[in-house]
Length: 321
Image (tube, rainbow, N blue to C red):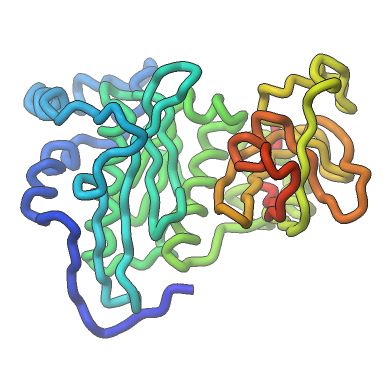
């Protein structure tokens, strides 16, 4: 839990002046522009030509696994915290699609991942906007408890007061089987937790009223956590029928659980390396004592369990489709 302190000092791993120059025009563009594909939003009215030019003139994304640390890491000390808060983003390349995506971290914990461009902004541009707004929030002594999910112009967002940190585009949400409102809740909880604030958990009327989550499911399952051993399965099961009637595909992010309802969305975190992913429960198992979840091959690969076969994990129910 983040504790507060009386000193106010700023530690930046790169010149704050240079950083603000890089971000100044991006920060002025409303994140509502992220939802470029929504017909009721006109990005032309939200982003000026000069702002578009600034984005277009940004340094090309490095063709390496991540951007140089000197370009992507910000450390900020806040009077409300007793340690420096490190905010950074990294650029990765999807080997299958050959496209880049951006992951945003707070104190080495991934909080948001942009897999797709939106509103005329690349994943890296969107990451820069979010990093800048989080930095400003901390410098202004913002309280992480004020960060909540919400709606703006029919778009799902994460905000604190009048500050909009991000909007959620449909492509990012669909890629992991969540509604845009569901993903906004997930990202908000990630940010709150990384900054030491409690998560918005089950029983909250806001969550229960969103998407396809019933109030009954929210009360019984939402926010539920388990810690135990995860394994994975693929091979001979690929192409066979799962317990929910679907055809098991080892390349999809699914999992087997003994009791959770089919369609439950679970965040799985490997406690040995802190890697995580979101899976949908489609099958029953594992039926080996001590194991709590059986992951598809894709999920096992994402969380780094392929080689070891098993690993100690934490699972958290975050939604249902």
